[in-house]
Structure formats: C-alpha cells, structure tokens
Length: 400
Image: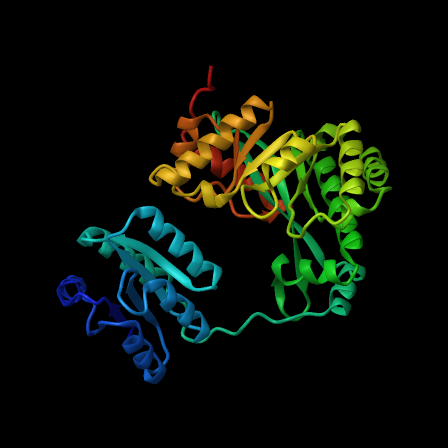
C-alpha cells in the first residue's frame, strides 16, 4: 500500500487535501506542518511506494530547502508540488527537483481541483514502479570497446514526420547496445564512457556506416528518407572528419543532402576553431547540420550565429504540454519564428500526445518526432509502423 504524506503549515489545507484524497480512495494519509517534522517521519518510515505532497511556501524550512533535503535522503518515491504562488515559480521548483533526480509527479495550484488530483493519482498508480528494481549496471571502457569490435551495437530509428501532412520524411538514428547478458542497453549507459575512453570516433563510425547502408536499403525499396546521425563534440575535433563522412556517403550511394548530422553539445566545445572549420566544411559538402535540444545546455543563440545549421530541433522540454503552458508556448513560438527567419527547418522533439500534435499543427511547425508518433524501432519494423501510422492518424491537408 502506498504511503501518502502531506506537508503544509496550514492545518485547513492539510485537512482539505486529506479529505479530497480520502474521497478518491487514498487513505490513510499522514500530515506534517513543517519540513523538519516530515524529514523525521521519513527517516523512521518503512520504505516503499510513496507520494509526498509538498507546499512550497512554508516558514522556516521552505519547500525548496525540503527538496534539497529529500535529494540528500536519496528519496525514490513520487513528489507533488503544491502552491498558491505564480505558476512559473511552481515550474521552476519542479525543474529544480528533477535536476536533483527526484520523481516529480506533477504540480498543483491552490485551491487544489478534485479532478486534477484524481487525474494525477490515476497517472501515478498506472506508472508506479515495481517495489524493487535493480540499479542500472555500470560498464567500463573495455566493455564498450568489446561491444564496438564485437558488432554488438545496433541502430534503432525514430520517425520524423511532416506536421502538415503526416508523411514520413526521415528518421533519427539512435544507437543501442545488444549486450549478450544484459539485453538492450541504452546510450546513456555507454556514450559518456565512450567519450571519456577515447572510443567515440570508433562508435560514431559504426553508427554512421550502418545508418547509411540502411538508408540505401530503404531507397532500393522505394522509401526515400533523410537519415540523421548524432555526433559528439569529440568527433568535431578531428579535421579529417568531413572527408571521412563524405567518402562514406559516396560509397553508400545516398545523396549528401539526405544525411543530417545532429550536434548535441553535452560537453563544452574545447577547440572552437577546429569545430567551426569542420562544421563549415560539412555544409560545403551539402551535408545538413541540425542543432539538437535547442534552448538547453550549450545549444544557444551564439551557435546559430556562428555555425551554418540548417535544421533546428526544439527541445522536448519546450514541446510537451506547450499548448497548456504559457511559458513553454512563448519559448516554442519564439524559437519557431526565429528558425523561419533564418530559413531553417524546425523539428519538434518530445511529441507525447494528441494535444502536442494538435498544437504543432496550429503553430505550423515543419517536422515532429516523439512517442505519440513512434518510439525508436529496429529498421525492419519501420514499414509495418508506417502502415499503422497512416491508419491511425487523420491526415490534414497541406498548409497553403
């Protein structure tokens, strides 16, 4: 049974929220009127599935400090932020909690609306994790080297579709590690290790060559797609990288224009001159460049000014829910307008539901990708997905 803990210095609010949860069938509920009281309870309470409703504005230890203390406790349950403050303060606090790797279930404004509370709890119940889940296994550079040499890396492909028509226009290549003992290992568990271990060039080579060969196979089947491959900042420190990429494009028989290199700056550009040299030469060879996760990390306006990108991918944090969130809406539309003025193709990442899809169609974004459209899949699954996609989505006429 889940533990539910309410933290609010106002006894009326505690009683009200407790009553609302009880009416929805969620009881018993513990209530605390301060952060220290709640922390003391958490330290002695049995671990298990748990949801904490936290009021942000409390005297003494406020909600932000409590979030930090939760992270120190390695809290693994769900967290709901509750406040009567401005919605942007709630959003910022939620972003902070996620940065501390806490599971933020949602945000609720006071007074809490019963239907919103019901929806949130139903969502939590449907997604509640198993009581015991093993921590992700860690790997070393030698493990990743063996995977590269042993042919254990495989490409998955996530479709990118035209927002106006629903037509499939391209795919993003996402590498996976098919581990002989651990099953499918996702890139966040080995890309950083490859970068630190000096293996990223070998890894990128494997991914790029397989993606170009697959693009050629699709073309032979009558399916002409633009294929995107992610590149690391370490790849952009090798001055012969553009010549290598073009040579592989020529060998594959895929037009250079149909290859997109997505640049995600997970690390700061250390050799600016070499990177600018390489990126400019890639564009001269008619290979497209996409600035990925725009608006986050080091993907900034300065990069748009300095580098000849011709595609802008708007980060998922500004896409999902943008139709209902004024801040996301403003950032999304500003990014879209800027890309249009620069003559860039726009791609919205993180399209999770029908509301996101409808929002993009209203805004006139060019391309979209996300779980609403399709999850990343093996190449052999693409044609089957395409038939289902056409059957599932009501395609709108093209924009004038």
